Length: 181
Image 1 (cartoon, rainbow, N blue to C red):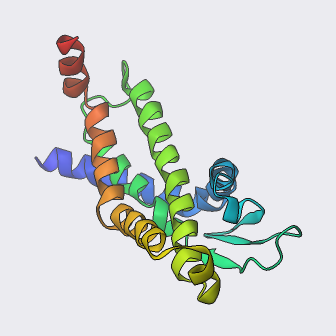
Image 2 (cartoon, rainbow, N blue to C red; image 1 turned 90 degrees about the horizontal axis):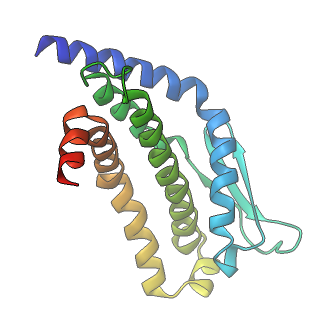
């Protein structure tokens, strides 16, 4: 038990260092992945999305100057990597056999959910945080949807995703799912 706690602490410490020092660069990649997803909404098709250290700014571009600027604290959407790496470190032999492959898959899943979270946060902020512009461009049900999606991710989803990714990386979970096939 103590060994697992120490491994968790070491993994979480590595996650904190990774999150602190890599976040600004990570947000550049995250914006590149989130921006095409955001283009699916015609209201935000011409928005410029720019990473800025630990934040992401979305604003109207030259084609849509009336689009207000919004600021998203993106580091608040990605810190579940700390929990995941702490949990991953408790796995027996995490960097042997297929552990590295499982880690890469889990990190890819985290990345995909981070990109979706950025889109949801931008949509929720435009829907409810831009005053009259949001009221004109989003129906009340749309506003409720985007806010519920963002809060659902922030309150429970990001932690559930970290635990789900960790469960997927556990050797016993991988073995039992292969036996089921």
